[in-house]
Length: 240
Image (cartoon, rainbow, N blue to C red; front, side):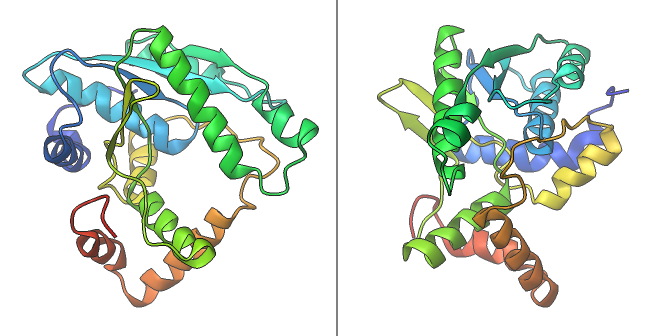
C-alpha cells in the first residue's frame, strides 16, 4: 500500500532535501524522534523521512513517538499499523495533558499551553530513547499562520525557525517539511493512502490558528502565490 519509487516521490522529497541541506537538518548518525500526533502533517513527515532515508548516502535513525494527551476515543491503532508498515515501531507516551488543560485548569485558550506541554513530553521521550533531534511536521502554511498570529494578536514580527537547538533539553528541533504547502501534504495523504487519526480534542477547529488558516485561504484566492511571497519576504529564517 505504501510502497513507491524515488521518482514517485520527487515532488515530496525535493523540497525536504532542499530544506535539510540549507539548514543542516539531517546528518550522518542522527537519531531523530519523529513526533506523530495521528494528524496528516506528522504522518506525511514520517513517510517522507522514511523514503528519504533510503536514498541518501549516509545513515540516520528514525524513532516515531506519539504523545497521547489522554483524550477519550483517541484510537492510535491505524497509526501503529502505519508505522509498522513502514518498517518501524511506534512509541506511545501516555500523559494527562488533556485532563490538566481542560478539567483542572479549564483553560479558555488551551492551544498554546497544550502545545508547550505536548512538545515537552515529546522531547523527554526523545531523550529517554537516545535521540539527538526531534522532527516536527510544521509546513509552510503553519509558518505563515504563526507569523500572522504574532502580527495580529501580539504586534510582533516572527515565526518559528526550521532548526533550533534547545540547550536546556540538549536536543535539536527540525522541521523538514517547512517548504511544503498544506495542499501538498493533503495531496500526499490522498495519493499515498496515508491514514489520519480523528482528533477528539474539544478545541479542534475552534482556534485562532483556524482563523488564520481561513484568512490565508481568502488571501490566496486573490494572490495565488502569497505563501511563497511570504517565504521570499522572510529572507533568512529567524529574522523579521
